[in-house]
Length: 300
Image (tube, one colour):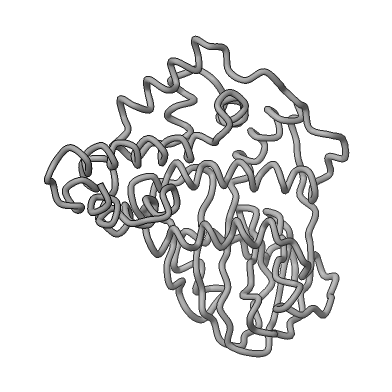
């Protein structure tokens, strides 16, 4: 394909998706307010795409339960590949000319990372101004697969806390990509000791004052005048859990207190402690206590 004919697409625009794929996505994170990362779930028939390039870095995460034969081209270099079983990830860096075909209808997720977001994380973690991802044909990467599944699950059960959860995964995914699939070959910078006590107190105070809101790592880090990466890393060093886990812990502790001291319904308690419905409270409550809110109350 000549340079003049090259397709540059933005998958946040449905008409752009339909230039490449026959069906629109089943779900997307478009209206969830996630920072630096964008996720879509697809179910597409056997197909051959035109040659094109994304404006964002793209990770294709395929279902491990279905074997699909495919071919992929990166800048004209063709390779046959198989998805399913062991191989379930492909990485398509932004602006890289790319084409693919596959032989049967299949489900997959697409995770897009903003190039500027990845550069920001690279500056903070390895002090480099330019980072390049290396294209990857179908391969096995359980860490990326798990992150992809977790992000996709958020599309099906969006709730208060979604932004904080997505922020945490976006940072973890970016660090993984820099370490394993970029032109940076040296160890990431290490920082030990956690947050200074004043900053830690400031972070915890801010979290508690905004506990029922859809908190984000960005908002907390901005309050502390720190980068997202360093805040997340040093916060976990300080108290042993990530910002997302800490927020969930505090919401569950509030819920337990209300279950003990009030006759409010589980739905009312869920709303009061920052969950969008009783089902979301029940899911998190079970993770932290191995029981449901109703059972917890009956056992008092």
